[in-house]
Image 1: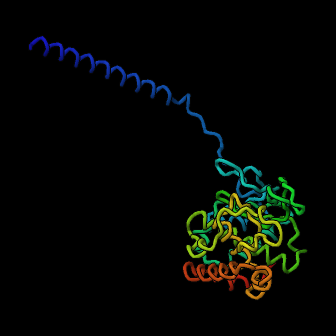
Image 2 (image 1 turned 30 degrees about the vertical axis):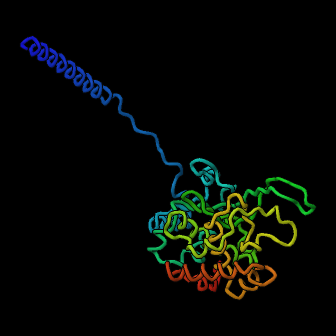
Image 3 (image 1 turned 135 degrees about the vertical axis):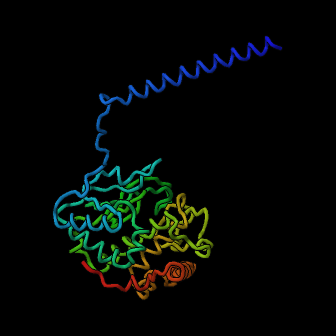
Length: 311
């Protein structure tokens, strides 16, 4: 028994010595690694310089950042805008034309920001708004053509006004074309810009799509199996959405776009006629979206649609 006790005491002393040795060496290593000779300034880790200039519009952009925490960038890399952690957004862009930044900022402020309270904007606005000269959507189609043959191709659709990405919105009209657009085209720009902001809110779960809207969705639609009169409108959609990636959020965002772009009478004449809304789903969805946004979030889409566009 005594022998066991002595062995135990000896083992304890050895362990204590080893622990003390390691602690001392760790402290010495820490001291050496933190010596004055090794301390160096870390490199600048900002991705972009902000603000990006000293023009009048740069000061306005800085004021927007100070108020809402949103950077508006006209010099940027397309990869920054398209980055989505594991993949890239199906859009391509080019940085903005600096001679038209001022009018683009004014359009965004007057035809989007002014529609919402400051508190709402602080909640909804993303970290960045990219001011692009050109914005195009990459479009892929796999199905049948007019002659019934199976085809598959990828193309781009230019002239996109706005889209939301991962922590950002891209505005594609920093190019001078706003001044020459028709009233109808300007309405679509307004609708797409506001829908992008609200769609970002959907992604951040500030808003949600109501179950009543989701229940009107078709699932597993493959339009290429339906050659003839039937198309995306037959299924209650306002635009073609690839069946493989269609989500209620995508569909809801398109309704936001057109319900903000067009006053009720214009929306009805374009989308809820018996020849276009063959299933009656579009009219029912539109009613749900209007009532949901007004009752749940206090956003009156009809009121936004009737606001005069300010260039």
